[in-house]
Image 1 (cartoon, helix red, strand yellow):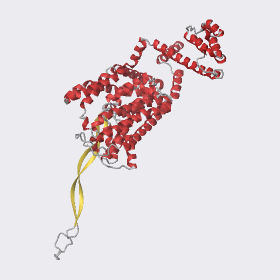
Image 2: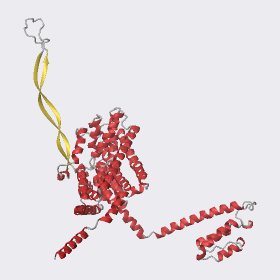
Image 3: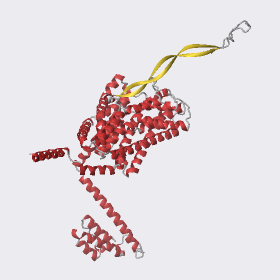
Length: 610
């Protein structure tokens, strides 16, 4: 057996192994002496045949076993197994050594070049947390905190500057590049995905808050006493949502959105009262000729009523711009060649915005560092966060982690049969930007770049799905609102029945659609959820102390849900996209060539007429 191992090792390592002369048979010596590179395959077959057939001599055996003759076949089988193991290990080691030797300075430089933004952003988050906690003992004044967070404010303003043209141009180019059938199918898939994931998020939030029950126990005092909560009726809020879908002025929709305000009006009305005068008079007076037992008296009463009136609030009406851009893109796409100029214009605008994003992205790590550090410095004393609020924070974080790290990747895997965590790794910079800016709309330019460049998602899908998702798909916000509503009910010792819990789930789902993609927009829609089940809206002040932190986590979950939705919709729409590519290659011609054909045809007609 040892002879075969010696000769085989010499074959694999290209080195000559000379074992003891008594251990080698003449056949193996001849094989080892005549080995050459051109006879490797034949030699390997002969060695294997010798291992299986030749019985090892008892004088050179490696095992001191008296019954070696009886145990010959098992030794041969175990030797064959060891030979295979050794060969596999040597091949693996040689392959690893080859890969390590092939890693050059250019490979390292290329890796750093591809992931430089991500590394800078992660380092910025770590430095921001460290710097924030290091500055907390210095007790900076509010003015000092404002000045300290100024670089982060600049990043927010830069990103928000690009959101408006990016939403319009990406939607128009994405929808106009598809036919109506493909865009309608893609839209239906996107809406179904949004509704399913939002309902799952609400269900997870309700289950988590019912299990942990963070509102039980002694009530914490409100962490923030100031601030008046504006009353909002659920019916008016949903009507505002529909009104904002159709803005009367597109220019005004770029910086304002419709909002119902409540005004108190006083009006006078006549009230008729019935007076009983008989009881007030002396009953012994019998000379009264008139019956005064019942007298009708009319008085005027001033009544104060709260009447809804038209109003507005600052902020981009993203929902109205999305609806207009989708309709406009469908019309431009149906115009075929006549709409080519508009398609080229919006495509060029979208490309210019993305190039601006690639410039601004270098400043993103600096802005994120100061945004996070400024928020940590601005935090109140952590010891004031009571037991109820701490358990509420844990409940929201657990729900968001379950939804973001397990449910959404599982949906992606079930649909695409691909590794979801590799897809998420390409989104790392967008997720960290969402964590720093706390705005899904401000993160939209970075999300476009990560999906199109890192994950190679079709631009027609990202331009259609991402702006719509950043406007109406709010998984993290829906989960947060469901948890917060039931938490406030538990704080007030209110036992919610099944109907009220169902109302909370439906209202939280609908309210998350209307939540603007701006920081702390969930607090505004939270009023709708609370009023739908009769909970006190002033108890929102209980959760404001930790809302800045939870707002960042739910924004990150929202961005993750939008991005995974784009990957799922692209996988489901690959048939329509391929057929669209085939039609484009066959039928469409460049615009310049069509003009040249028309010019040559006119010239030919002119020559014929002459």
